Image (cartoon, rainbow, N blue to C red; front, side):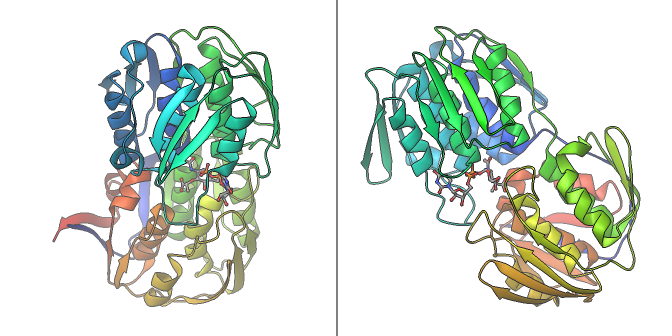
Length: 417
Ligand code: EPZ
């Protein structure tokens, strides 16, 4: 077993470079299987979710070649076999193979996806979208079998602007006969990255990034290239670390527009930062003003930054409120922040955080990916040593986080126990 050990209180100086977006890459990799020739994806982050998807792509008999962060996927010998539970439960994004294999072969057999324990995480919006296109859905225990005589374009109104369902329905619709319109589509920027990849293959999609996406079905998709956009949640996590410990800490390779909601909240708190075209310089901010945050779909404050933001709130002078509206259980980190010394009271999905509190290192557990990130932030500012167990959650979504932080002065390491 391994644990992360952090000795807190050290200022962070130097440059952290942001990698490709996890939540883009985990959709782009399955998307490559929609093509009928080799696809190249650049700037793929070095995270374990990537490796879990590679296992499924290889299981489907597709070759993968990798040159650092560039991967080439050859879908020409794809065998559309059952994707086992062992493979599909490793991550939430395995469900993208549903839309891809249904869209291309009108048949897919796969088990219910995995993913962080932040709520029940149903896939009804995905399945209803597939049915609207003409698919029949059979569920046997945790296994789903989707079949369609023919996939026909349709107008699909999502009951919630689900990121995954928006992307999955795009996948299932690219080869469908006629036009599909997705209404109340999610507007996250990663969806634009996926639309661009499919259009590079010869798809005819418009509207990604807005609440209405139009997909004209086509006969063939050829090989294509795409570059993964920078990870706005990784960037936001390091921007929050910089707000707590930065000593001219430069976070490079970002798209400032993608972090607009976070930067607006940080300005409200009195955090000083210097924005450049593709980077931001962070300095530790004294005298932080309290604020209230409510998570929303893009372009609102992202749910994935809820947990790291709550650590900054423990250092504000006064009462902050963090309200989660997307996931019903994004609260796994609070008991550990309290154990570290934070003053937090929880009422359902609303946390009241009274600062400024001194945090003292202790033993903690990561309960999900972003909870783990929050514990790293807390450990970096706590006095003494903080130990974090169940670190696989963190390594799923933060590329080389130990090296990125050590290289700017953090006393952080992984040790075997
Ligand atoms: C994506 O999850 C991200 N994951 C999540 O990031 C992110 O929190 C979420 O979008 C919201 O931005 C990936 O992209 C791999 P949703 P997704 O479908 O697509 C409900 C991280 O930390 N819902 O937008 O699964 C659902 O229960 C992860 O990187 C249904 O009810 O999120 C939730 O309450 C965590 N039925 C809400 O919608 C469905 O069929 C948002 O879910 C689908 C979703």
